[in-house]
Image (tube, rainbow, N blue to C red):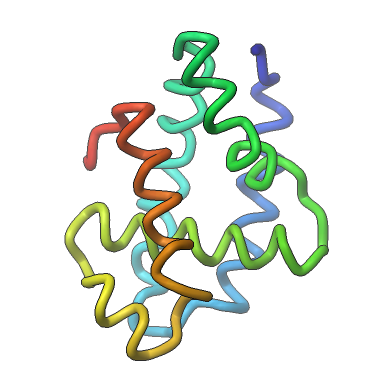
Length: 122
């Protein structure tokens, strides 16, 4: 699957806008790192075997859609906090306790995507 770089740039701009509104202030310093991580994630997605692409296509579509629907907004937020878990900035417990995410499964589904695509943490 080929994703145009302009599409990725527009999606990342939209994700930044969403996260600027949703993310707790103490974690907003990680937004730029997360956006760079998403660029690498999409690059890895494009290089991944067809089987892996099919497993994570829905998650990638959520990130690229730029929709204002509740599911897309929630997916962006969950992807961000899952990233913080992935890079050891927070724990799943903390994300759940302070209701940063919808539920533990939402974090674990994003963590599976990050691991399937073998995206480096830094």
